[in-house]
Amino acid sequence: MKRLFLLLLCLPVFVLNAQNLTTEFKAKHALEAETFVGVDEFQNMYYINNNILYKKTAKKTFSYSNIELGKLSMVNVQNPFKVILFYVDFNAAIILDNNLNELTQTMDFTKETKVDNVSFVTSASQNNLWLFAGDNKLHLYDYQMLKEIFQTQAITFYNRSFIPINIVSTYKNIWILSENGVLEFNEYGIFIKGHNIKGADQIFPFQKGFIYSINGSYFYNDLIKTFPMELDHEGSVLSTYINSSNIFLYDGSHVYEYQIKR
Image (cartoon, rainbow, N blue to C red; front, side, top):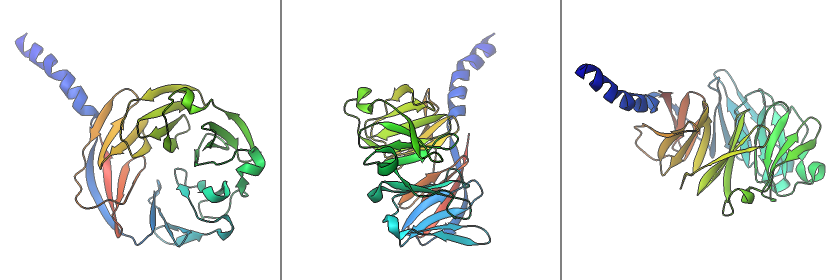
């Protein structure tokens, strides 16, 4: 009985520790880039030099540029068969295929949806994109029909002092990050909850929740609790990217790859 009591006493600690994420160093990749974008599920690396997007595979390097749309502001490589490019100065986006060929025509959000000052774009289910615009609303946009499907209430309805610094999504959820918290919506644009996270500077979808970073430390939120992620890395980090199984850290000349484990 005494042994059983001690075992039960230790069980909550074991369960808690089982949720923690650990990392294991896998590889170091040389890369000279102005901007490191990320790595897709097939280990293809994306980066930007001189406003040109590059995709480096094991056998070939692809490239894409569109000088008519100005500076490339954002690239989303969650789906390597539908790479999303956003040009904030022209309020426009375009989607590329896995060879960086144009899969869609240029989407001019001002012309087609009357949505001005789009600041963030991310993926959504089916043939849709999520837009966050100057009206402080999320807009679901059908890029095949070139029209808006619906829009949410202004996010200041949920948090008056909320100033977004990024949005990320899966096909089921979308999260809006600010310095004083994270707002979570479902795939239909329905508000789910707010996460009281202060000072986060980056956020990445991961498994059923998301990973966020604060001053170089990483944490996993499974939508119920938050757990630290153990990462032993020395040196500067200019940018970070996380996919479904790995975290990539770029220092300006090399990409350090770590496998995420539970």
